[in-house]
Image 1 (tube, rainbow, N blue to C red):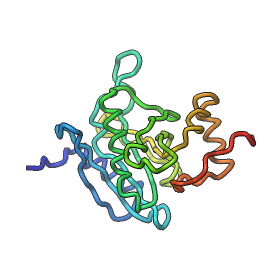
Image 2: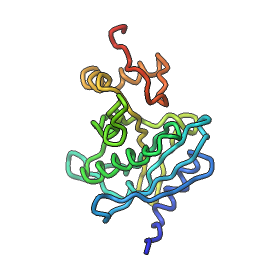
Image 3: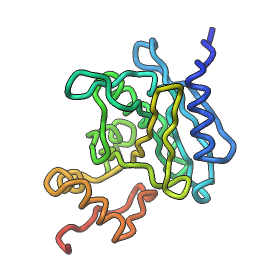
Length: 200
């Protein structure tokens, strides 16, 4: 028998839909042991035609610990957007969410989760998942959500190339995001060429 969603999950789903807009579909995804689930809300064509918005519901139930061992200042959920025919993208996002939950330490904007995209899309040349402050919805402002005294914030994730991962490691994520903006890189293009850093 399915367990009904907790009040927290219901509230998170309502907040996400308020950011995404559109008609939602919600599905539960389980870890390998089938002891833990994270749900995913998906809406279509609200950013632009042919693009789906994907958000986790349930990652924020996990306590994350700061470097001092105390609970991190905010709980986290993930959001992403890709062409709607990428049917396994929800699995990519959920895998990232389970990784964060099991690791118990927060992933901050500018972090890279290596090879999680490759697990589901080995044919793509962008194997890594990059995390940023959300910028695709609500005029670039994905509002923090308060559930009682609990703060919940979102990280946006999208795929990047190996050379882009190396650039982030050496030059920093701020420089990388500046280049994304300056060159108007289409993060929806899952087969885009890597950024040519030699021309910078």
